[in-house]
Each structure stands twice: as structure tokens, then as C-alpha cells.
Image 1 (tube, rainbow, N blue to C red):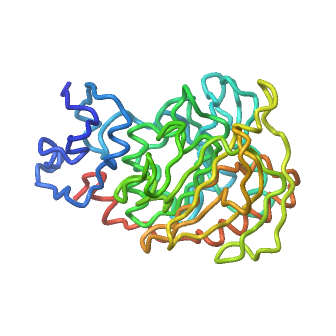
Image 2 (cartoon, rainbow, N blue to C red):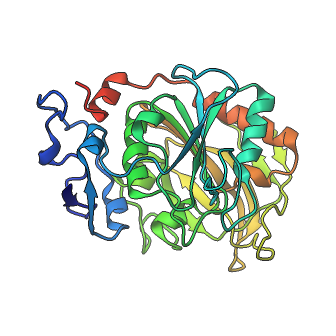
Length: 346
């Protein structure tokens, strides 16, 4: 076994000099193009030590294997260009090989709601089940797809939405040209804590950090509640005529709609997708604020939705919303050269 430092604010990330050699061929590998975990993400995790074996060094980012199970769709495995739906909503696959089996702490399975919509719309997809709090798919699995829908459901608090390995893998997937849709009301709070982030405020996103650089989020407000209805914002994704009623889908511990969700204001080059009026958990009203946004970096496209698709009341409205988002995300071609670098197959 070989021990290496875990993520630290001043760490080199996965591009450690000790692993700048292809463990199969012995040839040197240029890892300068491998994206490190963003500084703000690294600072969010405590330092420590972990161990990897030689087999694990054949895949980058280094670390544990994917923490779940991949379930193929009805057709044979498809070439890149299709969708991977990650069922990461505090589920567990311990007692099943089927997707959407919530034997975790929450009974609500948002992943199945997305799967039903994808099936109805005719999209081909595979599903990856993640045990509560565990790593998502490894980089090699991600790169069999061009679009990833990461469904967090109501996972938040004591379960991280993304692990440190997830950050390394998904940011490198995005840098390779992949499209991602993150959905869940506790997504940003689980990374940055329950704080508001505003330009010039007490808390401010770093321009090189995960929220701003990768997601295109300039400002964030937590515990803004679940508005009803939500409206499409006229632009690249929506026509502006959409209005979707919402429902209290998650009430396992009582009516918690006041703490679910968050407002995410995009950078100037971002796009608003869904906007809403409402009152947050502290009694402050807001008007026409974005609860789902998109960002096109020029290399990747990403959607961040703190209003989860599961709370949209009707199946017809959910399908309308999902179809428009996926059409905007498109079917990009993932850079296979980058994939080879990440897998150290040079």
C-alpha cells in the first residue's frame, strides 16, 4: 500500500509527482492538464491520510472506486452521447440490484421521477446508484456518457452531496466537454455551509472556485423555501411562458418547505432558467429570483437547480422542463484525449 496526502488547501491535488509515471508502460505522463480540486472545495474538507493500491493508480483522480452500482438501460450499452442518471438521493443498493430503492433515511426517491420523465420523453439513459454519503461513479464510467444528471434529492446535512473524489472527477469531466445537471435543494449548502454568498458581502465566492468557475454562480441565498408556482425565464432555455405548480413532495419530518431550496444568481454570462416569488425561512420576501440556472463556459454546459424537479406537481410540466433543459445541454463530444490522460492510458 502507498499512502499519499488527502486534499489539503495547499496540496497538489491528484497531480502528485509520485504518480507522473504510467504504471503500465513506465512512460512519463503530463498531468498538467488534469484539473485539481478547486481551492474552496479543498478547504471545505478536513486533511487526513488514505491509502491506495497499485491497481487504483491506473485511474485518475486517485482514490476509492465508485461507491455504487451501474444499471444499464433497456438497450445494449451505448456510445458516448447518452445520459447517465446518478441516483444519489440518500438511497442504498445494499439489499437490491435495482435502481430507486430508498432504504436510506429518506423514503422519497427523486431519481425515479427523473427516470420516468426520461423514459416518457424517449431519452436513452443508464442509472448509477450511490449509497448515501459515498463516492459517485469513477471517471472511466462518467466518460461513457456526454451528459450526467446528478440527482441529490433531499440529501444534505450529515450526508455530503459530493465527496472530494466526486469533485475531482466531475470537474475533469466538465473540462473534457461533458454536460452536467446538478439538482437538489441542499446542493450548495452542503458544500459551503448555510451562509449567504454575495458580491462584496461577508461571504463571497472565489472567481476560481467551484461555484463561480464551474457552475457560473455569483451569489447564493440559503433556506429560501419552495416557491409555488415557478416560472420559466425567457432566454436560451425557456420561452418565458412556462408556469409550473409545485407540491410538498418532501414532508417526512413535517412540512419543511420553508428551508428547502436556494436562490442562485448567475454570473453575467449565465442564464436564468426558473424564477419565482416567495418568502424564505427568515420571513424575507423575494421576487423573480432564479432557483435554477445554466452556465455555458465555452467548454462545458452545466445546470444547477435548487428547486428539485420532483416538486413540480404534474408529470406534463416536469417533462416540459426536463426536455427543455436537456435540449439546451445538448449532446457534446467528450474529449477522449483527456480521458486517456485521466486513465493514464498514453
